[in-house]
Length: 290
Image (spheres, one colour):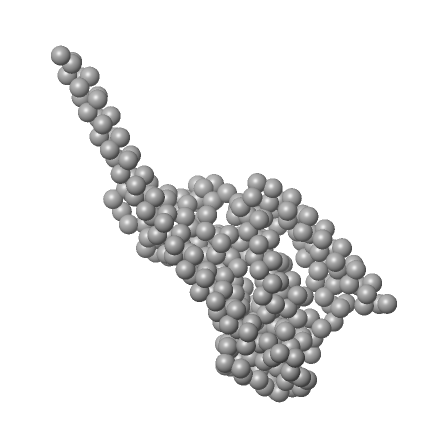
């Protein structure tokens, strides 16, 4: 016959095993739901980008004297006509959706970790609302970048330095952007921001952990998004070199961002990409002067 304390201890162990099994099942379900939501959002964003790119492809049509508005509905305006409010809105939407498509895969580990920590902290709670607000804060940071990119595109386009594919028409300016991007890849600021993006759990622990309140979730997501912008903004500037609506170029940059953030050698990938950018910029300078 078992001693009372032994039976009690075994009973506690069985209850703990049951709780652990239930929690693991819930966490697995949460990962599928959160991961599925990220995949759907990214797919919708990429679908929109492809739609815009197809709209911008005029099949060899002479676009001299005109510019395309990335609206997906074939809007053209005279190149010398000032931007309208609707055009600014369409360009901002283009950048915002493109950032969602490019950054969602690399942000997925952080978002999934946030949901996991939330569920483990409050097994009976519902971390999806909090995780949604965290993701909203993250996207808010990239929305700010999109607004800045829209202003920059307006300035460069007004200076007649963009072609019909929204790429820099000047080889010299393109070379300067490439070389600047390559140098930034080696800076301490790049390293600090990349380190924050590479370790989701450590980021949460350094900044107060999981938040249940809306304000806390938004601010934490905004902070993580700001680090992400600090890490990747110069790579996004390269869109002006290869063409803002060049889908292959967009995909390659998105892949580079993903490899930097989720692989153990991400820091060295960033530096290797920096060397490649400097080399490409130097070559472009030589070509522009020959």
